[in-house]
Length: 226
Ligand SMILES: Nc1nc2c(ncn2[C@@H]2O[C@H](COP(=O)(O)OP(=O)(O)O)[C@@H](O)[C@H]2O)c(=O)[nH]1
Ligand SMILES: [Mg+2]
Image (cartoon, rainbow, N blue to C red):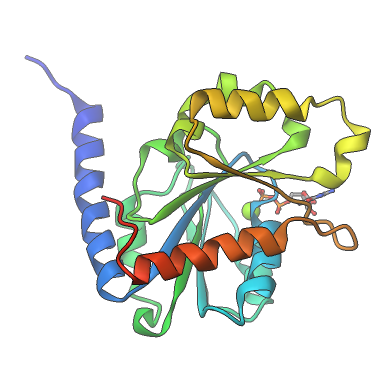
């Protein structure tokens, strides 16, 4: 007897993700799934992006972590609605978790839903949440070998944000070969370089403008996933 549990799990997830996507589309809501290793700077990037984007969009945030509400507390301080999901050991968010919590937002009054996935460069890439855009945050402190070693995350992403650029001069990371490796894995990927460090902010305006443009294109029916 053949039992293919992984296939069942993913096809169930894909079905719920399709329902999420239909709900988000019906509310004209743009959603971004933000992935990356623990400590890459995902929450800090969200804090900076919210400040940058709040004049153009009404934002809500879902935070995913194994434990604690620390990231949700940081986001709440930005004065946007936020819901924390604790996966209790689970290494990624799935579509069902999102379906359960989105009911807690006023979706009709929200333009942009930012979902910070559990810090992990592997598992989140396999689980569609119903998002419009997949953004991978990679800190340059992680080293230039990561795209080659963890290619699935880069294959799944639409956008890579190379964060902590303020540290470039202190590191041996070869950012040119890092970028070349990312493009070799996924030549359609859009790459941004950022620093979220207060006093050394870099790249926020470009990234926010890209997101606002993507939201506009979705509203005009010019981009569609799923
Ligand atoms: N130097 C520097 N530190 C950063 C930057 N972005 C985030 N950090 C720091 O990296 C650490 C992890 O950031 P956090 O946003 O919690 O990462 P997450 O686990 O991916 O959400 C914190 O100490 C941040 O202050 C950056 O662009 N430059
Ligand atoms: Mg975080």
